Image (cartoon, rainbow, N blue to C red):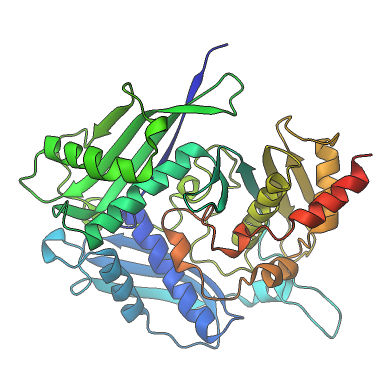
Amino acid sequence: MSNYLFTSESVSEGHPDKVADQISDAILDAYLAQDPDSRVAVETMVTTDIVILAGEVRSKADIYYESIVRGVVRDIGYIYPDLRFCADTLKVINLVHDQSGDIAQGVDADASSGKPQGAGDQGMMFGFACKEVEEDGQGNSVLMPMPLYYAHGLVRELARIRKNESIMPYLRPDSKSQVTVEYGQTGRTPKRIDTIVIATQHDAGVERDQIKQDLNDHLLPRVIADDLRDGETKLIVNKTGQFIAGGPHADAGLTGRKIIVDTYGGRGAHGGGAFSGKDPSKVDRSAAYAARHVAKNLVAADLADMVEIQFAYVIGRADPVSIFVDSFGTAKHGLCDHDLSKIVESTFDLRPEGIINHLGLKKPIYQQTAAYGHFGRIHLPWEQLDAVEKLQRYAGLHSG
């Protein structure tokens, strides 16, 4: 058997779809800041100097959509009229309306009857963790796939350079990255980075060779360790020749169109439901966060080296209808995947209310997740390793 390649991509906060995601989550945060029990499902579309909002809300909060939209767009860096998507000149069209009472009837808890909060939708959600990137540069646990981890790192650092430094003054907000990693024969051991692709928006009159040299000199050394790049690692920059027209003017953006970027870059499965703009009663979001939390703690507890978890829910029902754990043959200590599933079921409260309470999901924490991925960012509540000892105790009971 020979080695093989796997590729993941990421996009910057200035990418049109990510602009839409950030606006949707900024609106969600504004509602939760005033009313933690808000029910929000807001979609955003962005195009040439226009932002269109749609969706459903039930809340006691009173927010001002236009100021939120302009603030998000301004913070991203769309402040120049020549980009044809500018915080000061864009038009906001608000089509958001009240949420259906049918949803509340099935989802809301009822203390008088003892009815628990039900799932806000049906569907399946996945969580994933592996040891390809175990820690960040500060020793914090990451446990994410290598291609996505570095793809995120490249566009995140490129945005930081654009906003805070003068070494590449021609940078504009829209950019994308792609990282191809070479793996060993088992498919679990990354060996080296084979190819790096970066497309970055820039001012007119800047040559591609200059951009490529600047990225090679200033960006890559900050993000990717020298031992992962060798003389055969390829760097491909702005392959069309130039990238002047970009952002929502060049390509309309929609909420929820970068779900693989948001999760595991294709190394782990995705249930299909987008995250941004949805309050945590929607298990599309909250149960996906719980699945990541469970998977990361299982790997951190050294019960397996790679784990993918699936939960499935029915609208209005509290408990998941199924829990599935796949360790890809990496389970340890005499455990099998069935054992791991039972351990998960015994350790975690996977009802929506239990997930929301344990992870603190009624707080306005979501806009920060809407660019550079929802997972592998150590400060977020679903990234905390607070169940490792409990999992190890249960594993001792199950491993015989």
